[in-house]
Length: 479
Image (cartoon, rainbow, N blue to C red):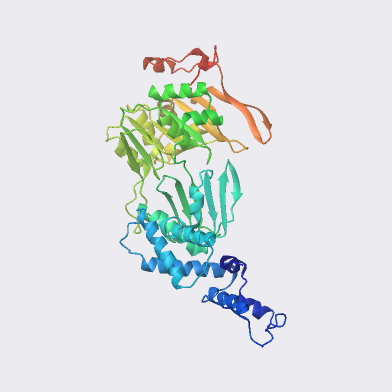
């Protein structure tokens, strides 16, 4: 049996002798001494398991990995740029040298497995690195050091991956947040951050988390999802895409709403691709994750308070500052609080074509949440004045939803018509119709309600002519 197998199963020669000394009598040849064929494997086995403080099982394997890893870190040049490809070759040379010096015999697959794990610890994100490299994974959830879950195809699955300890999870969290100038400790036990590829990260540690350090990573595709893919997935239809494209090009203000993990940011990325390349775009996010493809983009990111409780810069301050940056469009990754008022003011003062996302269960709930968030700005405004601002600023609400089969679909494209008395009136232009549920899949399609939006004249004034078939009249268009 190979070394890795013995370490993982906790089968060492000393343990076997200690556990059953009577059942394993010493076997000798007729001369009373061990033969050469028996002595060589015995000596080799004793040499291969000679590990200080080996606890057997997983502890023995982790001891080997820790010893080799610590020696590598001690011998690596601290001035080495870990972003260069030469570092991996340098680590491999030192790795082979250390194993040779320690007289550790490993098979080729075992040697490669140990090397990849150590490289992930030094250059990557430890046990999470294989999951981060897996394109089928859309979300990673670490609940303490023993429990790691992933989301694939909208469904949660538990993985066999685990960390060594809570301290191991904390090291990975610190590696993620430190380059961003953020911190997580007992004084500030939760943090929002991002990975180098833009994936969203949230970390919560004790004493807030009672299960140990908790890490949630929302993965973003290395190749941004295209509108063609959304049509292929069934999230949108050709008619709705042509309609939304026309709305973005005509500088209509759009709010994308939905629940957690419903695909709001993905849809915002897709809609932003319709913005003409000759416009100046300013984005405001808590953790920069938008993947805009235009060249003239200025990305702003909020900043938490430092250890002294000073230096915080929130989204509301950035929205106000963005107004001085001569933007053609302002895109807020998500409105959560008082920045909603400044966003509405921007939409009402010449910054048409702005977009944002918000958490809500329906278009009507979106407007109600906007009212609440506007009041969170701290101004004593009458409700009617707030509703008038919302009705004047927002042109379109796009509601996305994660279905029970895990798929994400646009379920409403709703026009904000205006005010009737004290109520904001809405009109559904497209609505998702579910026709069934077969083989674990939701069957349905986003269909036009047959109503033409009141702002269609603004679209036509921009030189964009939508065929009647988009609204359910005549033949279907092709995108």
